[in-house]
Length: 207
Ligand SMILES: [Zn+2]
Image 1 (tube, protein in one colour):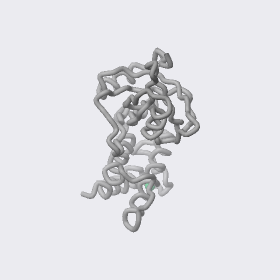
Image 2 (cartoon, rainbow, N blue to C red):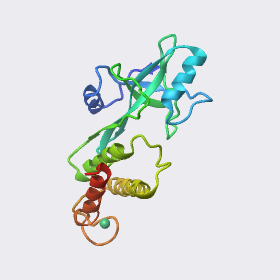
Image 3 (cartoon, protein in one colour):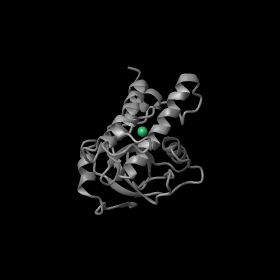
Image 4 (cartoon, rainbow, N blue to C red):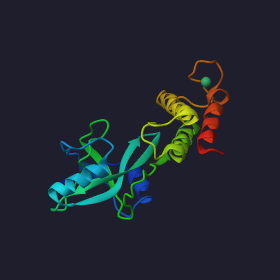
């Protein structure tokens, strides 16, 4: 069995997972195949089934940033004919173990599914980051990496990408709304880049 008892998972992960699926999270080994491509889990698993049998298990990869937020990313792993679940898709950062939450209520229907994110606290910058990601999904959820965008859409996507990095840098640096904005303009964040971010969110959603 390739699943490892998730004894090291903190209780908040179980609480988060309970809101998403009736199953419990497990720690899975990553065993990439030669044909596997990052971010192409559904395709990778389909190729694997054709070669070696087995089935697909849909669910969520769970990523945890302690004190900031927890995220569930829609995902598929391979279930072998021996009933082992194996993640055959290489993660972005080369992790060898991942936390996977099986979710029998979901299947992949060819459309990208937004991640589910839960802020760890009341930090408005973190909540804004989550809103920004959700707004981007509303507008560009079915577009891959900003490819084939033109004109206003291309500009909006670029602004999203910049804003995302900007606010992530702020969160990493432990910034808060009342501190001087990280752009160095001298104003507090809440009077400087926060209103700009809120406008971008509104523009993305198109309201
Ligand atoms: Zn600023």
